[in-house]
Amino acid sequence: MNGKTILVTGGAGYIGSHTALALIKNGYDVVIFDNLECGHIETVDTLKNLSSYRGRIIDFIKGDLKNPEEVSSVFIRYKIDTVVHFAAYISVEESVKNPQKYYENNIVGSMNLFSEMIKHDVNKIVFSSTAAVYGEPKSSEALQENHEKYPINPYGWSKFMVEQILSDYSKINKIKSAVLRYFNVAGANSEAIIGEWHNPETHLIPNILRATNGKTFQLFGNDFDTKDGTCVRDYVNVEDLADAHLLALDYLESGGISDCFNIGTNEGNTVKEIFDICERVLEQKINVKICERREGDPAFLVACNNKAQKILGWTPKRSIEDSILSAYKWQAKLAEKK
Ligand code: UFG
Image 1 (tube, protein in one colour):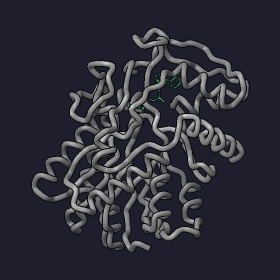
Image 2: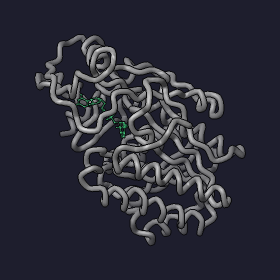
Image 3: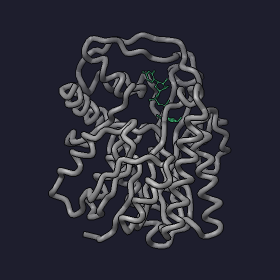
């Protein structure tokens, strides 16, 4: 055991649960705090029952970051070393329709968390941010962290504002932060222990995979200014992403200063390319219908990950084929649960 206890907010969700698993594999003890609005108790139970690792899930607390007493109780009960903060609403479309919900949850919730951290002398955090902070990129080049930030929806703004709050808190030595800006996260645990489980599912790869049973996949827009007319995204494997959090913890632990890092692969795939790869690796034809563009989709979002490589020592190891296959195995397991 490395003896450290990490608080994972949103640990019952997709990326949070994969990171919690990576943490216990690496000897950390983990307290999961989640209101289960989007996360799943089954995921927490699965993680709790894993007993062959050096670390373990020492507790699950059903609680809401919007409730300061619930947050406070965690810090009273456990000596937390570092917080890894995922808990947030993540739907771009919903954020446009209901910005108040996003600002209250993602910003006020985060501020409650930070206040309790400060009160209880917990001063390190890894924060889950997003490529959505860049908005509509100015060119079709891989984005560096210093690219202009101008989100185009309340979800992106909520994450960007929290980044700003953390940056200001860091300047007065209250909290030190490693901000990870994820690009498009894909795949599942390679043994299908846990995986992506959203209701409703809006993401590309699970939606293509769900169409393998004879349904039709809807492709949103083939008239973008890209090589085949469909949007380009940078798909990063969820287990590689979880590893980035471990490296960010090491970075903070070893005295690294507050900073932000793109977590992507330096490579883009169009929606059509992803669809073709799915057909190839699954060796099956999938029905597709070209539909209108979805509102607010930028044409091109690809990370330059040089900073994460250089400073955190992170490199993506798994291919897009690995992500698609692990997602497929997990989808099959999920279908059995329903
Ligand atoms: N797409 C389809 N059909 C689908 C689902 C998606 O054609 O059924 C297309 C989208 O139009 C887009 C691409 O596939 O061009 C990727 O869409 P996703 O919904 O999988 O991912 P996004 O790029 O929209 O969103 C991701 C994260 C967000 C984050 C955003 C940053 O999921 O949390 O990147 O821009 F905000």
